[in-house]
Image 1 (cartoon, rainbow, N blue to C red):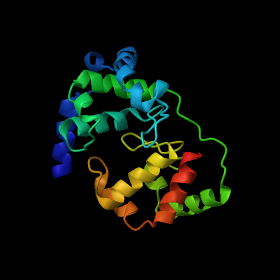
Image 2: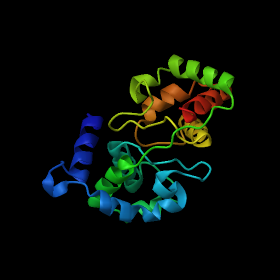
Image 3: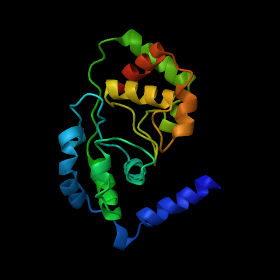
Length: 193
């Protein structure tokens, strides 16, 4: 019941897609100028432990911004920024980042580690939510090509319970039993896709 209530709240907060609530990619691009300082030009992060947003799914971006704005997900750098966003800004940012070309993982410098990561992904059934190519779907994150150290941090945060908001319960169940070695391998594998 709680999930249904939150879903209704989210739909009301963002608004049902209609011509009057259609996203404006150009407005999203203009609003994203403040995001570039951390998340990089064109959404490709060059900053350690900061995720790339290019090619991330529209719904995922919107959900995360709503979680940050509502305080369900916390980050000292994000809080003052998201507090200033209205619903149109959130829709526009989601559309803008989704329109960008995602980073394509570079040449794999450790294929053995990637193989271990591939096995960990299969064993934890990561594809059941993130799709077979790990590009995500709807409100589930694109993790293919994401920054390696950010993936390590995110998995550790899910494992420890430090990260909340969104798929916390599902990700905590997946991350909790992962060893540090598996987290390292999984992050390496996914970042090179």
